Image (cartoon, rainbow over all chains, first blue to last red; front, top):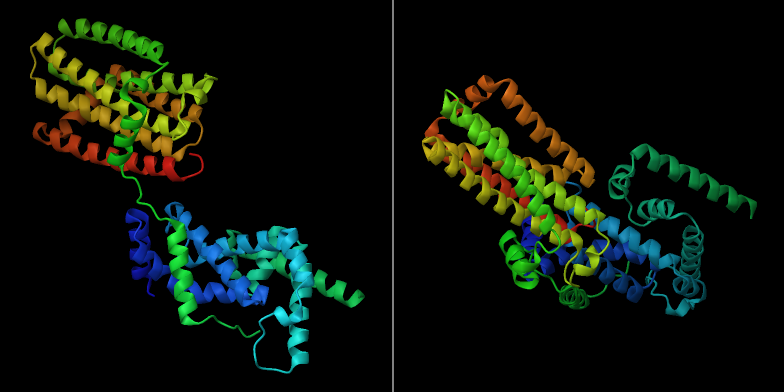
Length: 183
Length: 248
């Protein structure tokens, strides 16, 4: 979707509450946001629920969206990042992350069962460790690991200077590496 | 990590579900905001508790207006002086009414109780800004016509000068409200403008007259219309912000 079309759809939703425009806009970003959620949950249903929550929050606050301040994609990732931090911070979610049976996880068909199990276990370990970090650092790591975003994009999404994002990211990575080496 | 995507049918269903739950609404425009506020709040309730403020504003404005009119009666170059006087003096009533009512609302403890569950204090202030501006236009317009009849001067130029000054001031007022968060700062900026304008017109009336003459008499109506449009545009942004933003 080009920028003009996107701006047109957003204007229609803001001014007229146009449902068709909303459907078109959500459909355009659905897969991208879903992938971002899936990489962190490792579960189709959880990722779909999360994607739904992210878009619902976006549509409910779209009247406050100002295209002069940030692009729609950046704004959407900002909401997604906050939603994910909230989700992994909640005790219920953490419990689920640590007790979910391997057979309940929706894993890709490729790779051996051992590889799949290792991947799921690693994901769970990473999530648990990230969930203990401060909110801002959580957002940086999630966007970098799972959103595959560059530092400039992360800085835009979180409204932070690019240098600050880099410093926080590398400091945290070094800290996590040292922790892993000690174990 | 490879991603397992849901089927297109599932995505479609999810998108529809999101849009249904979001219950999208139209953005309220300026007219719908004013209409709903007058309908739900009632015109009689707009100035509840602020009659003392209105009385003080009327008395101060009336006193200065009478002194100004008597002073102009015996002066030479009446048209010149009356235009300069009206240009500088017109925003005084609006300033008094706006600043005093804002100050009273901030100080008053019973204010939130007056509000219905539909609106917040900011909604009422936004609505009052519009009503106060309209009242001020009526009062100043009548005064300009009275002055022209009293001094035997043409009414239209005086009315246009007076209204354009008021529009200019209203524009500054709404722009200050939009850019500054503190009520005290808003009142301070407006006080500086009104005071500076009144003192400036007394000290350098020729400069003011030169500036007023720079706009041809026939163009004053267009200037007024342009300023009115700009005011409505800024006021619309203010209303939108009141309705959707968290705080001014």
